[in-house]
Amino acid sequence: MRDVKRCQWMSQGKYGMMIHYLIDPVGDNDEDKLKDFNNKVNSFDLDRFMSYVDLCDPAWLCITIAQNYGYYIGKNDFMDRVIPGITSERDLVMELGQEMKKRGKRLLCYLPGEAKYNSDIHPRLVDAFKWDDNDPKREAFFKAWEQVFYSYSQKFKDLCDGWWIDGCYDFYTNGFWDFSVWAKALRSGNQNSALAFSDGSFCIDSLYNITDENDYFPGEVTACQGGQIRMDPGIYGLKGITVEGYAPCKDKVKLYSPNSKYIDGALAHALVPIDTLWCIYFNEDSPWIYYPSKDIIKLIKSFNDVEGAVTINVPVTYEGEIPETTINKLIDIKKAIRG
Image (cartoon, rainbow, N blue to C red; front, side, top):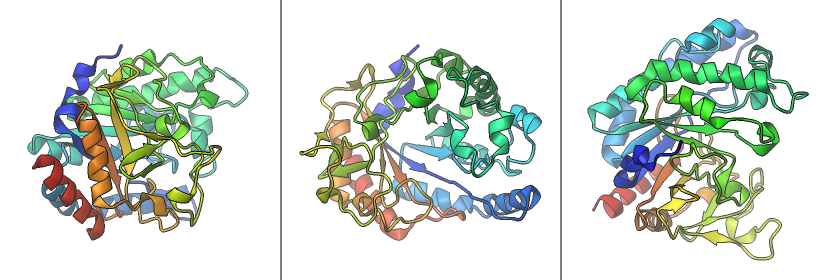
């Protein structure tokens, strides 16, 4: 069950940083793709990346173990038995967690909560983890994915302070999934792990948690405007459209700022992309995420004022480099928030 004490460090830390470290490996066959995947993970310059952390001072780092490309950073006992050849030799997540702990900082880990989006890129995943679109309950997948969560949690233990689980959408779960089962698996290595299961949050105009296991609100943001969150579903995929000129399915833009430490019982939290819409490099087709420093600072302060927290998602290359313009914004944030 929910316990906001597990994420009190987020409230105290005020803001953290996230990187969507996602690799779409190239090659003519699975063996070549795995080799390319390992080469890219091995190219990540840990010292350079941690110098950014030291410079910008986020209280936590959230790292994607995997998302839609179907390749996972670091070994997983269960996964490697079921479908060998999709996990990296280098355990970059462990390395980042160890470096964060040396600095007295926290680590959050991101995993998908479904296998459907992987199907086009890595179709073997769907079969290996028994994803079945003909079964509205998807019970076999749910049980298999529990073991994936359990294996990673047992591996990381106290090195991982929390989890952000994506893709827990109503059209996948159909109301059948008991998230307490997954929560138990994710907390098996660290009972104090803070959890968030996301169904889209602000992106789907929702201020509700899909489960009482959410210690902090997932808070996924599509876009912001003037230091406030836009509650706009459907902005993804639009090109060349500024946020001021776009209001899908609404005559008037709906903006949000928190008025309480809690959102539907969980700690108030927002996950905000800047300078990239989740992907690895700059996304010039998404102009609405190029916010000036003052707007990002205003947003963070609005959450901090009610003892909530914000995670800022920033672009990063395979080699672990963050663009200078983004670093400058993070330094502005540090000066304004840390004082």
